[in-house]
Length: 179
Image (tube, rainbow, N blue to C red):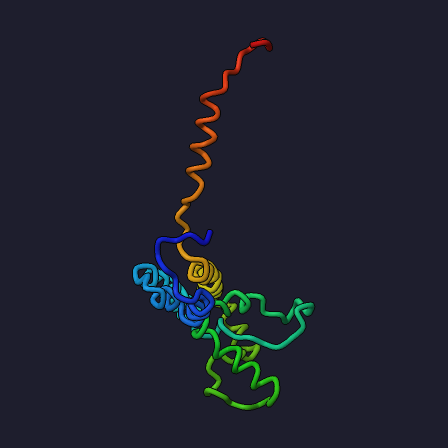
């Protein structure tokens, strides 16, 4: 659906900005209402999840996706929150190439096993925080699509439906066969 009543500025740039900071692509396009809605809801959900996970539930480690014991699928969703989740990727990349480096003071670094085990023993808050941060990223995928494609008005189908109704009104159907 490309016919919109709002002139959209550079959809690819708007989509990138919407990924970088949720809602920013909508502000760029002049759709401030949606920008505030997406920024507040997505970043709020991410912040609550980050808090519930004690700041230890957003991290990445470089392993094969086929290594199901160590692959962090939740970060794939968290990645789409954009800038708030990028330090985890940067931290993991630097740690992968220079083990033992203390970039950003360990912020969003993979926690040691004993810390993770302690968080898992606390149970629900950590897991709920993990889900919140992942869902925030997945919701931002929809916001990115909206920034790229524009608002979905549902217009354009009505004339075809009206034409079909007009044809149907002129056609006489009789039960029993011959007319």
